[in-house]
Length: 105
Image (cartoon, helix red, strand yellow):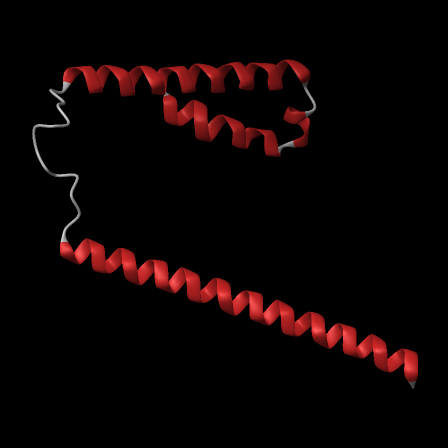
């Protein structure tokens, strides 16, 4: 039910005939709300069903391979961001120098 209300029903709004009908859009919004509340209900009921004690085990501590993977991914993301910033900076310099050439030549 929650998958149907949260994913399938909103995609019906891609059709113009359906998305221009006010009653249908209102019905879809109510179904999405019902799906969200049903999902919260399922999460809460399953969390009450399981015996959860955060101090009972040490499964939250990351292992060495996980730490290495996290460090690698953080370095990779940082490198991509730096490369994008440098590329945008160089592109802006090319645009500025092109406009300066037009002004003086």
